[in-house]
Image (cartoon, rainbow, N blue to C red; front, side, top):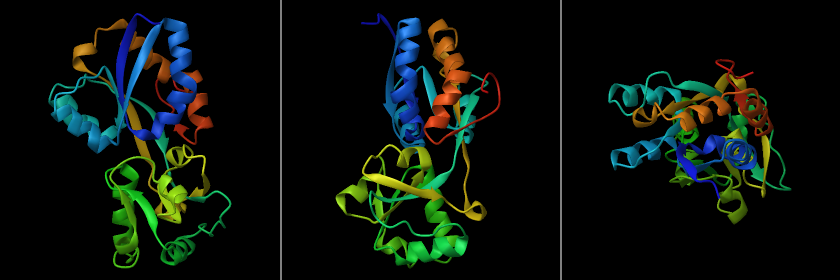
Amino acid sequence: MPDRSLVMMSGLVTRKAFDDHLFGAFTERTGVEVIPVYDPTVQLLRRLDAGERFDVMIAATPSFDALITNGVVAEGPRPIVRSGIGLAVARGADHPAIATTDDLVTALTAARSVAYSRTGQSGLYFVDLMKRLGLEDVVLPRATALEKGFTATALASGAADLAVQQLSELLFVPEAEIVGPLPEQVQKWTEFSAGTATASAQNADVAAFVDFITGPEAAQAYRFTALEPVPSGQLS
């Protein structure tokens, strides 16, 4: 068992890359165990308000501004990935056309229920998009809103027949099939960065972990899990 550890808070968007590829490789190489805490960014900020501690946080890049101002996160969070939003259906179900905005509107209005995350970045955007497309009174009243977690689980349970979320999060549910990304005209790209807790800024293990998750090995894992590495720092 590793005798050293660090705590990483992260949104769900990177979970598959970390769990399936990166944690094991980092621990094997350094002897440092990574203890993950996964929640949507909004929920992570609530955890911080409640006094929970962390060493590294992976979150939507704009959310770090206030954390740096308040002295919670050290200066210089490092961008790691950007993620697009997509739609999924239950495995074996027909895939609706979503190549254009008109196609998307047709698919959403024809759906019995669309599952989205109430506190996730994708869910917040989805609600706003429904308003902009004039579908607020058509799609949202019969939508399945999850407080957090993977929206595609609602496909497996039969609660919804479409799920919207970050593509990497849809990939996490084996009972679901990704239809594709939202049309580029209405796509929302969200950048995620790695920030170091101010209290951990001088911790060599933490610095090594941030270097690892912004390096080329991590970039490959991100691509495997429907994420797009951000070309900055060591990422390539």
